[in-house]
Amino acid sequence: MATRGGVSPLVIKRLPRYYRFLENLSKKNINRISSGELAIRMGLTASQIRQDLNCFGGFGQQGFGYNVEELKNSIAGILGLNKSRKTVLVGAGNLGRAIATHFDFGKFGFKIIGVFDKKESLAGQIINDMPVRHTVGLENFCRDNKPTAAILCIPENEAEEISELLINLGIKGFWNFSHYDIAINHKDIAVENVHLSDSIMTLSYNLNEIE
Image (cartoon, rainbow, N blue to C red; front, side, top):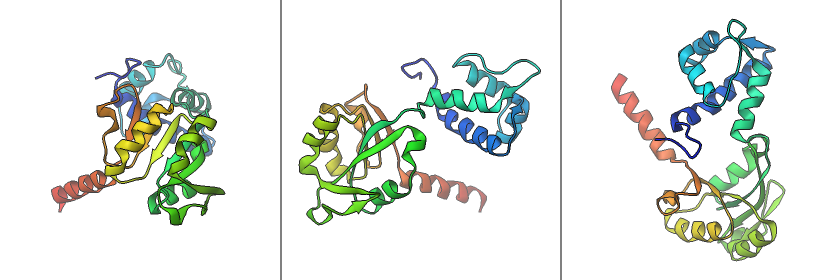
């Protein structure tokens, strides 16, 4: 299966990991690294790294390796980390509050411009210097401010209605913590589903295998 750009989703999933490793190398003042050395650090093969990076153009030189900072910046550009996409967060409960407070969205190309929740009791509370707004004002806010991304921290039974509204208001991508599958009816929308329960069940399976 390929993405719109013809690049395998598996390659795209590895790009953030490349970025993290290169960022750590840069912090250690390592300026240059070969594909073989990077492969050892990442638990991959050198040929896999070269194949992945060749999907996006030529990087590095034979016998010379990669310039760490240049490759890191190139991958940041491919991932869109140098952008500042206007983003709304819907759901200001414990999860939404934690994400809005502790996650550095600016580092990853996003900027939260509004936080919303349907609970009257949360309206007016301040999260990361932003007031929580009631969802009744979500439509007008989006029309005025034109966000292109949304974070959903709401129950599954609320997500369909909210996501449909947001898509109609110009939202192109979702970081989706609900269990509603937005992509089923919207193939042209970028959706990254985050299922914490899936992750811990996978951990449970792997523990079963070694216990």
